[in-house]
Image (cartoon, rainbow, N blue to C red; front, side, top):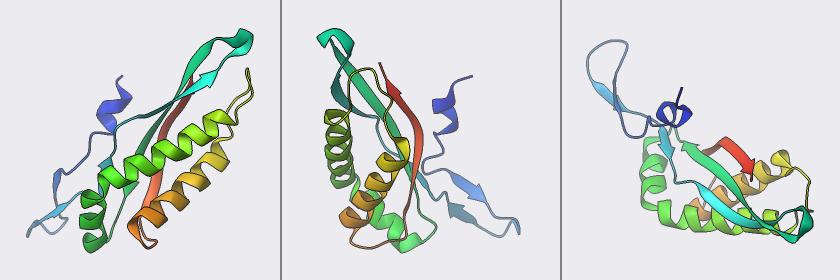
Length: 124
């Protein structure tokens, strides 16, 4: 099963329960964020984070779509900072990473209301 296909709900049109019209999906998938890490023995590795944003508010959803490059840059900075603090052979602190990414989301958008969703955090 391809999990990325499940995350591909981006900008799909869904029928409302009343059948009277259509609404836009509130989920926007962003490209995978990667950062370099040090692995045990001095080798290099990669940390990847799959992200998406759920925005029920239509006005904020438009702002999220317009701010996608800014969000990707903010996420890349947070993931790289997290990867730099990661000791070789240890797992990333996902709870802390999510909190930092949510704060970066709120800062990039200028207000709260968009919810960050994490797909996969992987260190290879």
